Length: 396
Image (tube, rainbow, N blue to C red; front, side):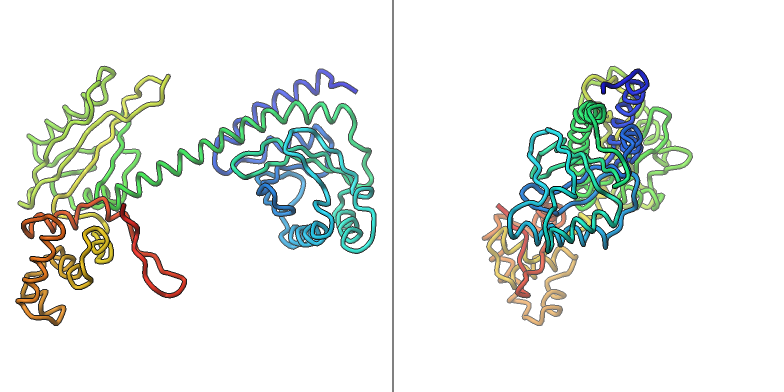
């Protein structure tokens, strides 16, 4: 039986909803609920499962049933028991071909097979229509709909509906994958800037701050040269005029050059802030929307995490004692204070510094401290070893 005009209308609405649901990391269930309704199914959903791993799955979206861990765990356990003896109980190919499975027939037998058949009957499932709508990045996404023992089997019209939906779920799942990769990249970049002690502020075309990173929040909360109310600006008149002019230029459609830097004085007398102002990059094909990004740096502070002694050892081949001396110097301790803190003689500290300079290539303590506080290697960190030892982030 072919689809009728009402089916085509419902199908169009469901397709539109698929792309709305999957334009996020955690999709909504609206589209799968519409598919379940069109198929007259008891349950429907998309299972995400690792390739070559029988009965390991999670529901990406689902309709018609609540997630019940004890039910899914029982199905997994029985499926693994069956698979250990003869392979997958319900074979699924990587292609999008639709499989209609009657659990009463395919699970004929005793033991774990019979128990799984009985268990499906117990939770109200007799027949399922399934298809691998996407197999990518070591994951398989299976679109399924199931009917209870009292319902009629799936027919040609139901297969047509499923076939029509599969390409759209596939496209939406691929788009979601790209979205996840993009968001993870953005989170990684944001985290890296925070750990390097660089603040980020994004301002929209109306002059409102729409994104403020933790480091930027800390700088603005000091109210020492930069303000955030009623809008982002500098507290002194001359700096604020320059900053506002720069923000207007960056927000204009003809902004072509890269970021422009400026310094902002601090009324407290501390070294000023360093700012870089630039237009917020826009995706290809979209016009600039007037949003501006500002990168902030407090010269008085190093990154959120200065280089650890272990990283210094690996970067420059320092001994443990030399690395501890270098790290203490970055904390602002004098040679006498370092000797007292580490329980060594003053002349030993001086000898350690001579060795540190020879190995690192630095010629004075100022450059050494600047490196410890500002090196991108501070993004590395030490992680516990299973055996209880400490390993350092590798530095090429």
